[in-house]
Length: 334
Ligand code: PHE
Figure 1 (cartoon, rainbow, N blue to C red):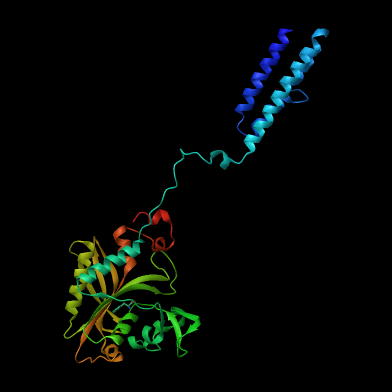
Figure 2: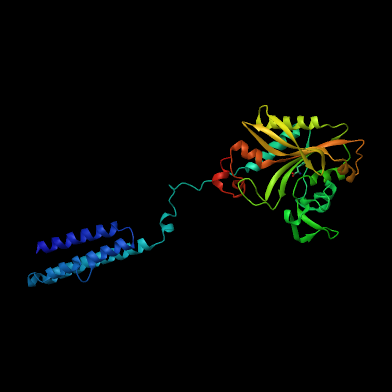
């Protein structure tokens, strides 16, 4: 009956190998059906052979059959427990796995531009001041010589806050320009003044590739005796050259702002394009008077530049919305 015993052995060897090789519950179930299946598994084939054994051999081969069957069933059960065990437990102490990488953050491209602007203007003797983003009409309009019938004061063109008022009950809004800071500084200091202020401004524009309802400006203000438009042009030219690292042409186009007279639009020749970068002009005497300065003693210039413009042009960013989407794949390029 050695033939039968050999078959038992072969069956056991193959069954144990298949069980060990099964990687998951499905594979293991297939193995169970093949080797232990009640209807047509290989165990059943072996059982059918038992009947062919000599009667006196039957107790021996029967016992052998049972032993093999138990061993295979036990191995299968053990393997079932292993494949069902949560993976974390199996890999908990795999010291060969790479560690968790610490990602270093970096400054936002707009913040980098702001810091660079501050640095350049600081070298020209301008100090940096901050102003509030929530403003009253006095600072956003009135003191800037913007009368109540001026279209810039249209409630639909501004973000008025429904849930807040000034200490005297007046309306408040998100500032639409950093020129507000000119007023705040002049109210608190006597001339001469030489400041820049960089920060966010808000306008309910329709958002597209070049417009955002929030963007950044750099405001500049210089007040002294005998300040001229030529000095304004020099400061802006020096600024542009310092930012670009080489000489750059700038040009003034006549314009109008209620708080400057004369007023200009500032363009910079950057590569082959004239880029519109902001507005500027000589501070209007009405503004000087509104903050208690004497227009016959001091004069000054002011400018307001769009910060995104510079950053987009330098890095060839073609959509302003990229700055505010916080897509790490975009931001980590700078
Ligand atoms: N505040 C103006 C604007 O936002 C820009 C400006 C600033 C113009 C200072 C003149 C002087 O469009």
